Length: 285
Image (cartoon, rainbow, N blue to C red; front, side, top):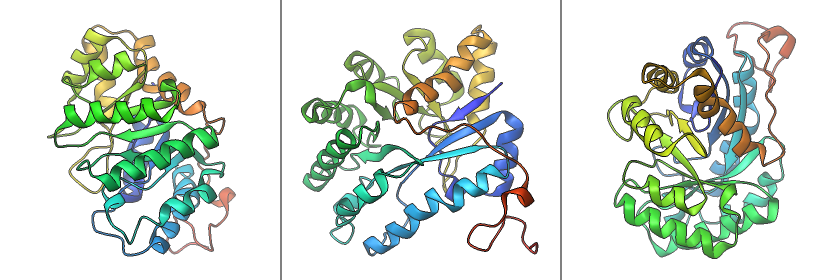
């Protein structure tokens, strides 16, 4: 079984997670730029973070045979902070880089005018750079936020097939499916979706244009729930081709639209050399 996790925040995870993910079949992932859990205080903190998503984190993932890609954007929560909004002017510098396969996470948190502005600007950048867009649907009033997101997406002129709306559930999936956008689902231990609920959605709506992710981060989350979902699919009667479509071919197809997807990893720390004078082998050369 091969797994591509299309939304996971490995900056928040350990090397043990990388090792366990590889053992579970994960061979590729996308790490979206997101909120770190506490407010950033200046655009400079974003530049260091973006640089890490493009440098150190792909290096770290590669030691465990996992190909790491990222999305870059001003997340909805921090779009409301005037100290952070100048990041919008920095994004073109990063969206031109090879490791970036989409603009994201963008969209809504509490649905404010500032979020409207950042969302529209970043969808325009996705069109300008020919990149897909990863859209975060709000955790509160998800149905209303999803409908509003789709309206903004339509107004932007971006091809619906270049957009995934993430963190969907049973209430929001049909509207997104009918829009032509891709449907993203986050599998969590306590909130969002469970493997069994995800299987029920797949049974009703099919496997086309659906992405399943762990969205694992610094909170209570599990980077192996993609594998658990695959096993739940098989137990429910889906075949191996269905699993491969949802857990591998779909994310490859969506992010492949960037023209920047590379799926070769390596596992030899010594052959990889050092990154900025460091390796993951603490105490080594």
